[in-house]
Image 1: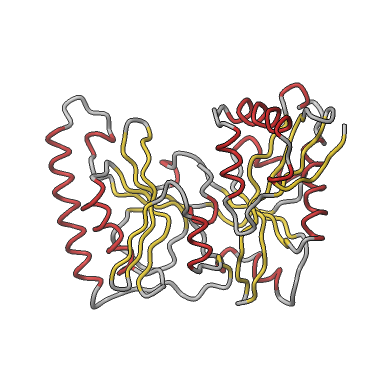
Image 2: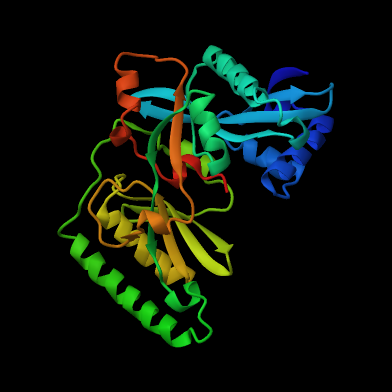
Length: 325
């Protein structure tokens, strides 16, 4: 077996056949080769970076991938690698160090190519492995914020129409009231030290397919509409007023979504660093799944870098940072 590091466009078609089978078997998905290529190419570099373990020249038995993202740390630009799609084929999982070797090979390559940090949101099965064997550290757990717009549908009630009508009317009225309150009393997110380089070029690449964006008079919102468990769920990706996350920008986003999308439920997954009344924070025991954010520092490019990124309170983090659904 040998491990090779390849950029997305360097992977041959026969290798893609092997990769897609391993990916779909490991994650219980049904992604085509074209879908995988498009997903991995949707970065500021135009490609992702893959460490692949080859059984022979064309067949792989595992892989680990990072997607490069531009971040500002203390206002200085660095590239971070979002860790995605790490897997080992079932018949090779007895080798406990195969994934370790893949990630370490990827680390060495990225260090030589100015990617200074890996981060990710692992599932329950891989969290302990990344922490204990790969040396990743935990920053924080992400929160879920919701508006249960159609409560009857969410509760799967047989006779849901009346409760849905009441909850729809209530949340529409509530959102309008909050919208009026945020105009004179806007709460803004503080200037955080670790965040994506949020410029039009990056956003154009990040939200190329499957997202909806609206902008009007200084307000902006980006969201994704999906059907989950027979519910129309709207995931808020980003919201701003005058370029800053704030209660006023969030209120615009919620009112806009309610008016244009006819949702069953609205969700924001991440950290909200300003005061707001639009969304209701779910208690941890009701979270659909735990979402820990972990990271591994590869190289510290300047003074105070580690002390800044290791403090979770310095991060602005939400689905815009890691949405890989």
